[in-house]
Image (cartoon, rainbow, N blue to C red; front, side, top):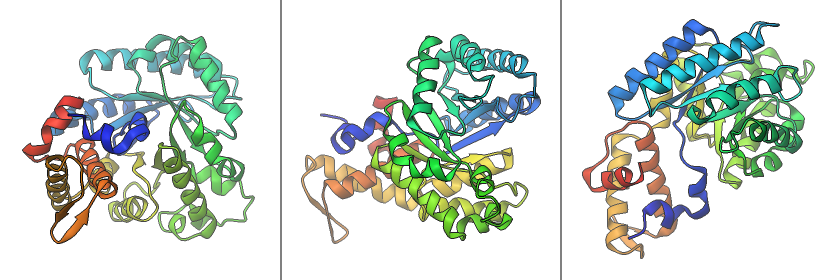
Length: 331
């Protein structure tokens, strides 16, 4: 029998399912701690529940980009030897930055096989994606997907075109640059944990990016909450991103943010139990319509409940035995 992923998702299955948290670190000491934490939580959850993205854009000192890139290569090589299931990415500079080509050649060319993706910031157009793709090909890393940061009004306007490019796997929203690109028209409050969910221009941009991703089977990734010591504010923001704005992934910029993001973006035990029962019933009915708890379900709702199970798996949640086999087969 075909896998539920193939039956229910079709072409959408090609985009894959990413961990719900993407953790960024730029200093070498923090990179090492992030990679160690990833390994520890892989042991705890039995799955890689967050990506570690090593940051060359904000992490590298001006003039020290080459040394920083070489350090990243060494870290990736070492971490990959210790944990084959680790998910490590790198954020390079924008395509028009003088260090971009060097970073792509050094990092993608040396450890491209060990990376999950490359993050490209300040993408303004499909032409920027093509430049990044050409750099990957030149580095013999044509297999690597690109994640891109949408950080300006023009980029938001072109979000659907950017998301449509086959090399793009995920779009992230760059809050701080987006607000500052408005020349003061959006107040500083629009960058806060509260203001970014209430200012109309910021909310509209987030909705456009999420819609563009869902239109093309890509992953919308919500940006940062800078108040990293305010756990309550992060929890509210993460729940809003996940439950109201259509995001399925979120950035972390401090280790304390990882678990609250996992909690906000993961299904509850009750949701997992219901989803598993409905999928099991669907399999028994050979995907024909069925009744569950007095409600009619067909492939449209089956698709939703299967995606609940996919998120649960990516978040390291325990799955009922009846559906575990699907993920063991797909691993």
